[in-house]
Image 1 (cartoon, helix red, strand yellow):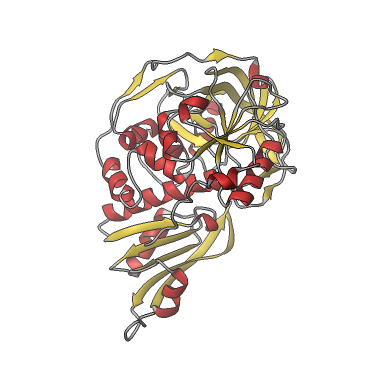
Image 2: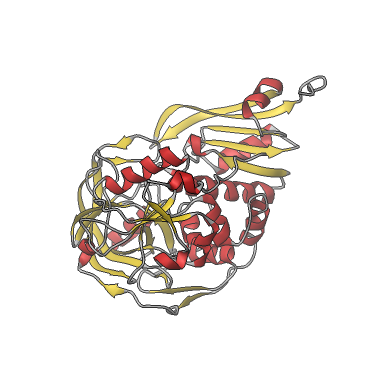
Length: 426
């Protein structure tokens, strides 16, 4: 299955006048794996309210791809830096030590291995410094219709009351004041399950939100498909090394920014928020997050994801692909590739390449991923429109549920009847 090639860095002529300066990772306080991509600095003054996100969108329109950019002059948060588009696909591959085309069997093999140790200790390097609450961070308002500033690239860490079942997940945090925020935890998530258990004890749930750690944690945190085991154990398998964590709930020792707080029974109106589907989620009830601490490593840029743009959709498609591939191979299906298109928001259309398509495979894929609206299995999906036009297929369909309500159907196609005759030469 041919994938779209990663965009090449823009030529110097394209950068002229746009404000971008090519930099090395060390120049802007980033780890070496950021050297796998084009990395830029933007020194013109911009506001954290809308202007950073809008500038990134304008640069994408001009250059043909969204550049990974460190904004060094945040007008309303002097002295702070923001990292925009922090997780493009080549960076995820580099951080995991694998390459496109080899990563699916490689990551599947890692997932099936034994976990490494999760060790409670601090890593070497400059310590994080305590800040004056959320006001010490350059949290962005990304879109004009958003209800305020949102922490979007923060990975929430929760546990059960006994400290077990460590869960990593992306949960957007709306800033209210320096020491108060609102956090939305979908009832279908593991964090919400943990919250219910804490509420049953009569105690608020501690939560840590970290940013700036190894991108492999983001790959785990974005996961919405089933996977077994403590999330740090899953991360250790992917990284093939021991995990160093600290704090309660524990965060990776290499995290550059950490927010800690308590989530109780109190709820407030949260939103609107521009979500990954390209539409605003209107106001809804979210849990109040009382902030107990904020810390940052000096000089480290604050990562921010624009929901529905390249980084957010890349995380969804990347994790869906490797988990679906690993699951189907473990079930004995001869799958050679899996792709979730970012044009389908990274998770609603699954393309599964196999020389042995069939309804059994389709049903297994749809059981594993209940969010996909369309699953296509066939021997050659390099051009999906061509495959659908020339192959005969059989179908499986079932109700599509969204937030507990039926919204139409979801469909699986197995391209089992090959085209007749010889393909044309040109």
